[in-house]
Image (cartoon, rainbow, N blue to C red; front, side, top):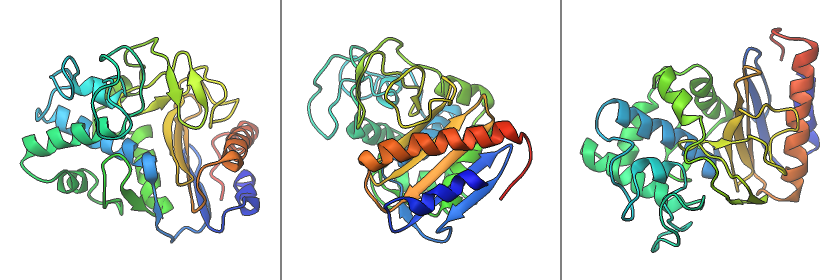
Length: 271
């Protein structure tokens, strides 16, 4: 796929990108293991949703600070701060991006499953090369193939039901404003259950031609994964250069070029 070749001009030393879905292509350092940073949250969210389907947890049970539920934690609506600490807002009032909230959600799953969350995560993602070596909010690592496995799950779910994914990729607690890390205040700042939803956000790290239903996540280590249900594709990216102005410019351009190339040659597999 021609559009993917632009990553060779990015300022990072190592990068790998992949298109997954109705067309398939990969470019870059495909055998290199990269830290996923906050893209980890996509895989962790799937594991928590599996636990909900198994009846270990309930999305609407109390979890986190008073008045918060597991749903609030996954949707960054619990009022908890970025790192461990006391709530800085009542639940359901603001969209406050919180690693701590994800760690509490994972602790609940671990308690109910009677095993470390890392073991539960590994069982959910068995058959992939995905590894969780740290926080469930940011501690996964793997190759572009491992991240592509997450992309495939979010396009055509096998670990969770389609109905569960549809709910998870729909805005939870609509209308909440908040700061999208790296891109400033958004009103509204829409999120699903662990998945950031593009909607009409501007500026944004996806492309201008991504549909409003696009969902995914990016990480400060220079990584991202988005899924566009309307285009039936996902775009995954791993780099070794921290997120910054370079990424805010390069990532939307890559997304738009990938979508444009697909529009010109739909449903043809390319490499």
